[in-house]
Image (cartoon, rainbow, N blue to C red; front, top):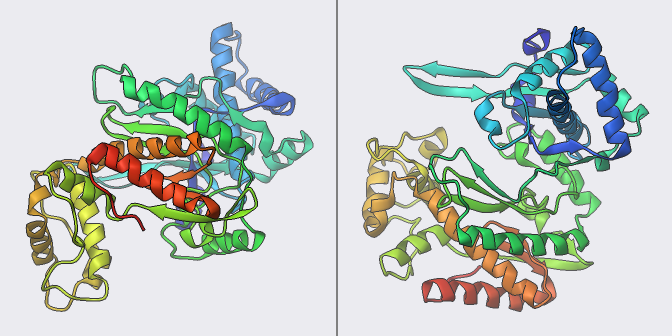
Length: 432
């Protein structure tokens, strides 16, 4: 690639990016016009002697439309209009898409040459065969591209979805049979119904809350700032499975999901204040249910190890234990935060050993990557809950294992959560 790949941007700027979505497209008359206009500029720069075949040209345009749509999303981001897009140039990441990685690579070079985008090349820092750090290529619009979009009258509404977009996504499959299981197929109708109701719902966040979101984004050292949302447009839910149909499956797509909780509680739904409820210790509860034990104690606290941050340390360590997929290397490496939260005189290894001993009934799942399978369970549970509520005419905003409803529907929400859980596991869960 060319000169933009060595441009000097701060690490904070580059890390706070939005992921490239190959299913985003420029839409409408204005959107199609800007794709055609910029496409002609790129073709002139190519100076090809022979035109592409019709099918190849359509795929080339499709790839350009996706590229421009994602860059435009960065421009229209309500939190940061200078936000970068993190784009992969690995063909494996576009399995099932109509994206041409060859086209993306050449279009990036040409857009840089025309002064329409800027950014930095991605990299992988490998030592002793292990990836220590990596970053995908980052791109964003220059002032020139911004002015072209303004002149063409392009706004956020011209950034749409490809007709090929699916609400069931299987990423990086490691299984031979990609056929959707019947229960996954059945979830399509629930997703479609819920998304239809959400598209008509009035879901608002006060302006002063948006200002605080913006301030948090601009604040240095906020580790979650890069996940902050862009606006109130996205309400279409979809499921993402990871590796196989038994892993992942959680619901994404709702713009409220990545709001800081303090601000999320200020949402209004059809003009009403909201309430949010979630399951307490859901993943530990599901694991203990597998061995026939109803969890009735705080697993994140270890007897004999006291301190103001021990519970927080326990929750984070438990998640690392169930998410790691290397049972041959059971020892966890402490992070600076782990060390800071340990009580004086207690080593991290001793702490982890005590925690694992306390959780002996479910330790068989540590180091097996069980976290993704638990996500499959909690996503099925979430779909059942929103479907129960929808049957009563109640719209719920799902956030993985928590749910938002208008305050007057709080009792119905709790009843739906308890009923769906009892139907699956045979006992009443703790809800907070």
